[in-house]
Length: 122
Image (tube, rainbow, N blue to C red; front, side, top):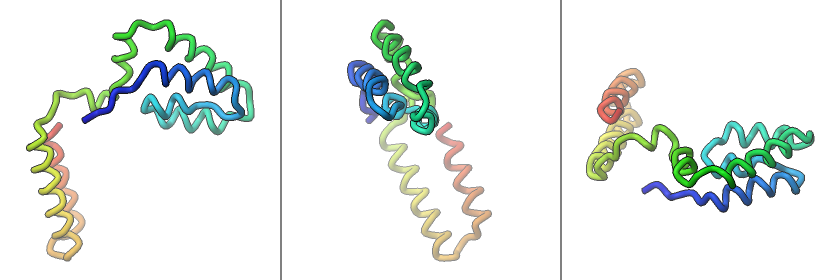
Protein backbone atom coordinates (compact mmCIF):
# COMPACT_ATOMS: atom_id res chain seq x y z
CA UNK A 1 0.00 0.00 0.00
CA UNK A 2 1.31 3.40 -0.96
CA UNK A 3 1.76 5.78 1.93
CA UNK A 4 0.14 9.18 1.48
CA UNK A 5 2.51 12.10 1.61
CA UNK A 6 1.63 15.10 3.69
CA UNK A 7 1.65 18.51 2.03
CA UNK A 8 2.50 20.06 5.41
CA UNK A 9 5.65 17.92 5.64
CA UNK A 10 6.65 18.75 2.06
CA UNK A 11 6.22 22.47 2.75
CA UNK A 12 8.19 22.21 5.99
CA UNK A 13 11.06 20.39 4.26
CA UNK A 14 11.08 22.89 1.40
CA UNK A 15 11.24 25.88 3.79
CA UNK A 16 13.85 24.09 5.91
CA UNK A 17 16.03 24.05 2.81
CA UNK A 18 15.93 27.84 2.76
CA UNK A 19 17.28 28.21 6.29
CA UNK A 20 19.65 25.22 6.65
CA UNK A 21 23.02 24.64 4.98
CA UNK A 22 21.67 21.74 2.88
CA UNK A 23 18.59 21.72 0.66
CA UNK A 24 16.49 19.30 -1.31
CA UNK A 25 15.03 16.99 1.30
CA UNK A 26 11.51 17.87 0.13
CA UNK A 27 12.42 16.46 -3.30
CA UNK A 28 13.37 13.12 -1.76
CA UNK A 29 10.15 13.17 0.25
CA UNK A 30 8.10 13.82 -2.91
CA UNK A 31 9.73 10.89 -4.72
CA UNK A 32 12.10 12.92 -6.90
CA UNK A 33 15.54 11.60 -5.91
CA UNK A 34 17.37 13.03 -8.94
CA UNK A 35 16.31 16.57 -8.07
CA UNK A 36 17.02 15.98 -4.40
CA UNK A 37 20.56 14.86 -5.19
CA UNK A 38 21.05 17.86 -7.48
CA UNK A 39 19.91 20.23 -4.72
CA UNK A 40 22.33 18.55 -2.29
CA UNK A 41 25.20 18.87 -4.75
CA UNK A 42 24.47 22.55 -5.29
CA UNK A 43 23.92 23.30 -1.60
CA UNK A 44 27.09 25.37 -1.46
CA UNK A 45 25.40 27.90 -3.80
CA UNK A 46 22.27 29.99 -3.24
CA UNK A 47 20.39 28.34 -6.14
CA UNK A 48 18.74 25.52 -4.12
CA UNK A 49 17.75 27.94 -1.36
CA UNK A 50 15.94 30.22 -3.80
CA UNK A 51 14.33 27.20 -5.49
CA UNK A 52 13.24 25.83 -2.10
CA UNK A 53 11.63 29.15 -1.20
CA UNK A 54 9.73 29.24 -4.49
CA UNK A 55 8.68 25.59 -4.23
CA UNK A 56 7.69 26.00 -0.58
CA UNK A 57 5.45 28.90 -1.55
CA UNK A 58 3.98 26.97 -4.50
CA UNK A 59 3.31 23.91 -2.35
CA UNK A 60 1.55 26.08 0.23
CA UNK A 61 -0.68 27.82 -2.31
CA UNK A 62 -1.60 25.03 -4.69
CA UNK A 63 -5.00 23.32 -4.30
CA UNK A 64 -5.14 20.04 -2.39
CA UNK A 65 -6.12 18.05 -5.50
CA UNK A 66 -3.07 19.39 -7.36
CA UNK A 67 -0.82 18.18 -4.53
CA UNK A 68 -2.50 14.76 -4.73
CA UNK A 69 -1.64 14.64 -8.45
CA UNK A 70 2.10 15.00 -7.75
CA UNK A 71 1.85 12.80 -4.68
CA UNK A 72 1.82 9.49 -6.54
CA UNK A 73 4.51 8.80 -9.15
CA UNK A 74 3.16 7.86 -12.59
CA UNK A 75 4.23 4.21 -12.39
CA UNK A 76 2.45 3.74 -9.08
CA UNK A 77 -0.64 5.58 -10.25
CA UNK A 78 -1.44 2.85 -12.78
CA UNK A 79 -4.55 0.80 -12.32
CA UNK A 80 -4.46 -0.97 -9.00
CA UNK A 81 -3.17 -4.50 -9.20
CA UNK A 82 -4.72 -7.27 -7.24
CA UNK A 83 -2.47 -8.20 -4.29
CA UNK A 84 -2.86 -11.87 -5.24
CA UNK A 85 -1.45 -11.10 -8.70
CA UNK A 86 1.47 -9.25 -7.15
CA UNK A 87 2.22 -12.14 -4.80
CA UNK A 88 2.01 -14.64 -7.66
CA UNK A 89 4.36 -12.52 -9.77
CA UNK A 90 6.82 -12.14 -6.89
CA UNK A 91 6.78 -15.91 -6.33
CA UNK A 92 7.36 -16.61 -10.01
CA UNK A 93 10.27 -14.17 -10.10
CA UNK A 94 11.82 -15.76 -7.00
CA UNK A 95 11.53 -19.23 -8.54
CA UNK A 96 13.05 -17.96 -11.78
CA UNK A 97 15.94 -16.39 -9.87
CA UNK A 98 16.50 -19.64 -7.99
CA UNK A 99 16.75 -21.53 -11.28
CA UNK A 100 19.30 -18.98 -12.52
CA UNK A 101 21.36 -19.17 -9.32
CA UNK A 102 21.39 -22.97 -9.48
CA UNK A 103 22.63 -22.82 -13.07
CA UNK A 104 19.56 -24.52 -14.53
CA UNK A 105 18.87 -21.59 -16.87
CA UNK A 106 21.27 -19.10 -18.45
CA UNK A 107 21.35 -15.35 -17.79
CA UNK A 108 19.78 -14.77 -21.19
CA UNK A 109 16.92 -17.19 -20.50
CA UNK A 110 16.41 -15.61 -17.09
CA UNK A 111 16.21 -12.12 -18.55
CA UNK A 112 13.80 -13.20 -21.32
CA UNK A 113 11.45 -14.97 -18.92
CA UNK A 114 11.67 -12.13 -16.39
CA UNK A 115 10.67 -9.62 -19.06
CA UNK A 116 7.75 -11.80 -20.14
CA UNK A 117 6.50 -11.94 -16.56
CA UNK A 118 6.87 -8.21 -16.03
CA UNK A 119 5.22 -7.42 -19.37
CA UNK A 120 2.09 -9.14 -18.09
CA UNK A 121 1.83 -6.46 -15.41
CA UNK A 122 2.38 -3.41 -17.62
